[in-house]
Amino acid sequence: MPRYVVSAPPRELDEPGALRTEGTPMPVSPSAALSRRHLFLAGAVGLTSLAALGTVAPARAEEVWSEEFMTRPETREGFLLDAMDEWQIENAKFIIAVIKGHGLDEQAATITLATAIVESWLRNYEPAVDLDSGGLFQQRPSMGWGTYDEVRHKKRAIDAFLGLGDHSQAPGLLDLAPDYHEWAPGEAAQAVQISAHPERYAEQIPAAQTLWARYAGDVAAYTD
Image (cartoon, rainbow, N blue to C red; front, side):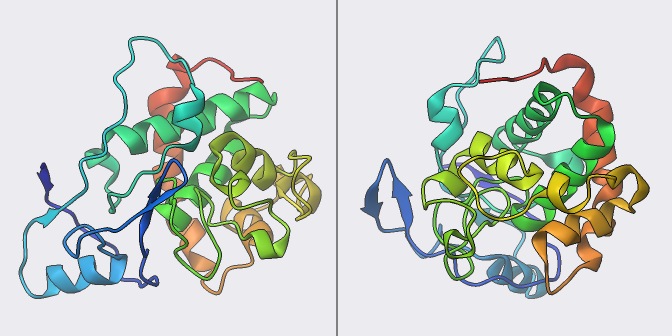
């Protein structure tokens, strides 16, 4: 089982709970079920590495966004821009691909990427992290974002965030900020997410811009 040195930002989320794979409940060991709170506390007491589940993204020579990729849960935690694992990189690239597929631009991608970094560290959370939230954007079925499965389906979750998902009743970016170019990116993200910590989106704008610059040139538009 691989081990990683993980640095977590000093903020808390509830316990992730049990991992679900392909719809079947499966218990998570105490060493694997590590919340952001645990990672932060571990750093405070001097632990330098933490066990992580051995779920790895499939290696692909070409960018083929399979249904498995859309829905498969990832469980490792942490976000460091220059130490992203394969799942985080694939999720960042897929967000860019979907943005391009909708004919949207770098600004829309920056807002979307920054939101996913804040909400999930670019991980498609399968277990509910906060109440009934899940997925890249921690969308809640009870708030109209879609069903349990839809908020965890990466393409549908991105579409819902953008305001382009027919399955979602919640307003997205293009509903709330159609003139998002005139908005500060962090404020546009907050308009959609209505977070108790609105300042966090602006903090991740530089990282989001770096991800666009790093990957956009090599990612083709994704449409379905």
